[in-house]
Amino acid sequence: MTYTDELAAMPSVDVEALRAYRYRRVQQQLVEDDCAAILLSDPVNIRYATDARNMTVWTLHNQGRYCVVPAEGRAVLFEYANKNCLIAPPALPAIGERRLGCSHAFMDAAERAEAVSVRWATEIVDVLRTLMGPGKHRVAVDRCDLLGYRALEGAGLRLIEGQRLMELARSIKNDQEIACMRRALAVADIGMQRMREALKPGITENQLWAELHYANIANDGEWIETRLLSSGPRTNPWFQESSDRVIRSGELVALDTDLVGPYGYCADVSRTFFCGPGRATPYQRDLYAHAMEHIAHNCNLLKPGISFRECREKAWPIPGRFREQNYGSLAHGVGMIDEWPDINGDTPTAQDGVLTPGMTLCVESYIGEVGGPEGVKLEEQVLITENGHEILSLFPFESALL
Image (cartoon, rainbow, N blue to C red; front, top):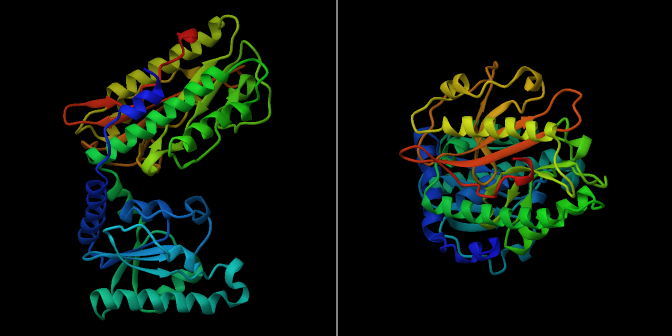
């Protein structure tokens, strides 16, 4: 059975149950944080709360689309300010009303931006009063520029930081979210298989990376967050984007999918390939063996009830020659995109918390010496279960390097 066959054979997602669960999670978090509502501008948060999607990547860096989610009742979505966006929109149970949005960004309002921001805030306050009555409401905000923040405060709102609220709401997945994630991972498998088959001497990094994009869009995926693929000497250090470099035989090729697939869920998996013909060198296999041990050890720590601190304390001891260039994050949350928590080393920003069933994490490894000829990147996506963990990322490791 091919990866495409496996995707086709997957059970369908109960979209209504998925939407109801996520909206309930947001409203429960609002109640716990004593907030009347949250104003969402991050398109990923809007998607999570309401399942409304439009121009996601564009609105990651542009104003004009936002949503008010009350602690009780249905949301008001302010859609991108073109009336065509309100023609025959999908019926979504969380959304009680759609309006055209207003942007006070300089691109849209230029020198009138401050006045427009006041009108923008006034309409949001009017919506809140309609939903909840008069009062100095405590409202969470996930993302806001300086003009918007000042305008909302000037309109009489008590503002609190909202991204924490959304990250906590998003951190526990139900069965339908996991089903979405499995589909995204299946699409990533199709893409990585296409890449593996296309990997021949003479192909460029960008040409190889395009295979992943093709597989994602062709199978109802959405976008890819990064372009982390490198070959040969560019695999060391990590975090070099794909380029027009021609890949040669005998080289390693390392990649990180960072793929947002079907239903908007992330498949964040890393693999390192060997470009034949020929045999991997003892040095390449040694790097790979260390990365495999790193991943296996840290995955085996994951279970409900273990604290982030205990994960850090029991993490695989990185050999000294690889320590300076190690990835830094032992594991991080994943859902629609990378999420809280980030379980990193003992730093001033080290996070506290406990792993809970329903959390999904990506376990990271990068093995490469300072000044070394190449490096190896591996990453697994893992679900915390009632009794331990399940590895969700199923694409095989590289036989030529084992």
